[in-house]
Image 1 (cartoon, one colour):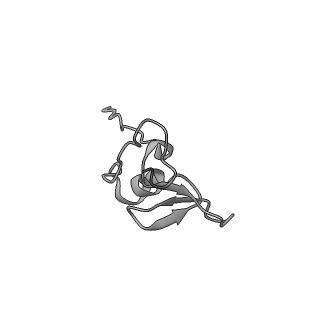
Image 2 (cartoon, helix red, strand yellow):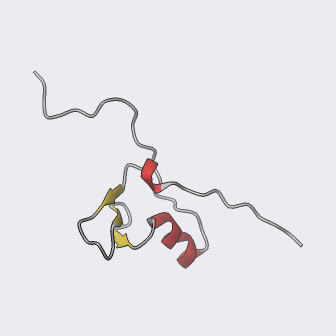
Length: 69
Protein backbone atom coordinates (compact mmCIF):
# COMPACT_ATOMS: atom_id res chain seq x y z
CA UNK A 1 0.00 0.00 0.00
CA UNK A 2 1.39 3.39 -0.95
CA UNK A 3 0.78 6.31 1.34
CA UNK A 4 1.27 9.83 0.06
CA UNK A 5 1.57 12.74 2.41
CA UNK A 6 -0.21 15.92 1.41
CA UNK A 7 1.01 19.26 2.70
CA UNK A 8 -1.86 20.82 4.60
CA UNK A 9 -2.21 24.54 3.98
CA UNK A 10 -3.44 26.75 6.81
CA UNK A 11 -5.52 29.46 5.16
CA UNK A 12 -5.31 31.59 8.30
CA UNK A 13 -1.65 32.22 7.46
CA UNK A 14 -2.42 33.24 3.86
CA UNK A 15 -2.72 36.86 2.74
CA UNK A 16 -5.78 36.02 0.59
CA UNK A 17 -7.82 34.53 3.47
CA UNK A 18 -10.65 36.54 5.01
CA UNK A 19 -13.63 36.04 7.31
CA UNK A 20 -17.03 36.92 5.87
CA UNK A 21 -20.17 38.20 7.56
CA UNK A 22 -22.19 35.33 6.12
CA UNK A 23 -22.73 32.69 8.85
CA UNK A 24 -23.44 30.05 6.17
CA UNK A 25 -20.10 30.65 4.40
CA UNK A 26 -17.77 32.22 7.00
CA UNK A 27 -14.39 31.63 5.31
CA UNK A 28 -13.25 33.24 2.06
CA UNK A 29 -10.38 33.40 -0.38
CA UNK A 30 -9.77 36.61 -2.33
CA UNK A 31 -7.40 34.92 -4.79
CA UNK A 32 -9.89 32.21 -5.76
CA UNK A 33 -12.95 34.44 -5.36
CA UNK A 34 -15.19 32.23 -3.23
CA UNK A 35 -16.51 31.70 0.29
CA UNK A 36 -16.91 28.37 2.04
CA UNK A 37 -18.22 26.57 5.11
CA UNK A 38 -14.70 25.27 5.75
CA UNK A 39 -11.21 26.56 5.06
CA UNK A 40 -10.91 27.32 1.34
CA UNK A 41 -7.78 25.18 0.97
CA UNK A 42 -9.83 22.14 2.00
CA UNK A 43 -12.44 22.88 -0.67
CA UNK A 44 -9.69 23.29 -3.27
CA UNK A 45 -8.15 19.95 -2.32
CA UNK A 46 -11.48 18.09 -2.17
CA UNK A 47 -12.56 19.39 -5.59
CA UNK A 48 -9.29 19.25 -7.52
CA UNK A 49 -7.13 16.77 -5.60
CA UNK A 50 -4.34 19.37 -5.57
CA UNK A 51 -3.05 21.65 -2.84
CA UNK A 52 -3.88 25.34 -3.16
CA UNK A 53 -1.52 27.13 -5.56
CA UNK A 54 -2.61 30.63 -4.49
CA UNK A 55 -1.14 30.43 -0.96
CA UNK A 56 1.04 33.42 -0.06
CA UNK A 57 2.23 33.76 3.51
CA UNK A 58 1.16 36.92 5.32
CA UNK A 59 3.82 39.55 5.87
CA UNK A 60 5.27 39.72 9.35
CA UNK A 61 5.23 42.90 11.37
CA UNK A 62 2.76 45.53 12.40
CA UNK A 63 0.02 46.47 9.95
CA UNK A 64 0.06 50.08 8.81
CA UNK A 65 -2.95 52.28 9.43
CA UNK A 66 -3.10 54.75 6.58
CA UNK A 67 -0.25 56.83 5.22
CA UNK A 68 2.34 58.33 7.50
CA UNK A 69 4.14 61.41 6.37
